Image (cartoon, rainbow, N blue to C red; front, side):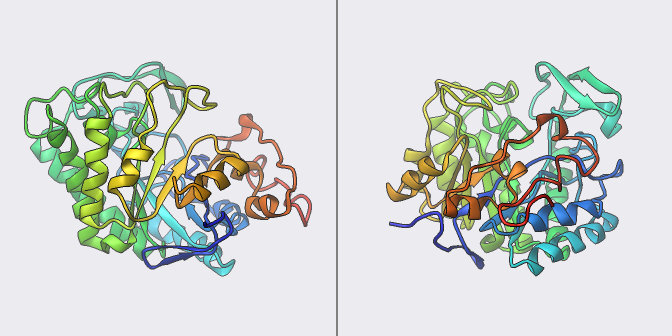
Length: 361
């Protein structure tokens, strides 16, 4: 059976190990969502991951409301990503760009426009803005013209990611953002062809995926889902009826790999009593399946050995352990991370965590 240190192929992407770096929003771009030079060092430090999934990256200003998060819709952004991707490649790493539309999870003070979603709903709690936290605003239900425009944005972003040098893309269809808001009946209240039945709610995911595949090829396309539990107020009453067919659809479309973020009842970043669907999804999706959420090294090895997954994505562990694969392989203790610096705009807590062999960076 495979171990975390065995290589694996995600389509044409040859990963040297099965320890993936999960997407991690770190808020080091500028106010125009243009990546900054410090990001090159951050990603290069973590190039020993089998595959880096970039931080969630906006496909449009409408869809990107997180302060200081990067985008991939403009030529300026593409040019700024190029040296970052090149640094990862120079260190022998592989990196894909996660394509992000946040749906209702934005504020007009950042995007300049009313949030949009599958339906006219409002997310719970508060949203980060440049002026501090504010209550979420009610989203506007998107119409046919909006859907056509947003599909164009996904296609443009996918093409831009390849222009920037990324090895591929991952479509972010999880965590309560726009595609997830279509998938789940708690947020999708539509009565047209995009709402109601599971087949209809999957339609937007299908159309986004088809457009990305048409632009860059299925072999360079991955997808992220979060099938179980409540994420940012987004939940489904019967997730097995929508996410298992969604995974089967992605199998039929030929996407190269699928990642699932699955919290459990004792999760450290979200909890739920809804059971994990990866065992059922494993039966219908036969290409590489990546699992994510609260895995220790031992749990990850066990998941691979028992055939539950082909690779494991680690998030917060990579924040403070840029050389995480080496630490796992040598049994070196992991460094704790500082939550206060997750979204700050400087080098502290970003590029200054020590590696096991070289000391502080």
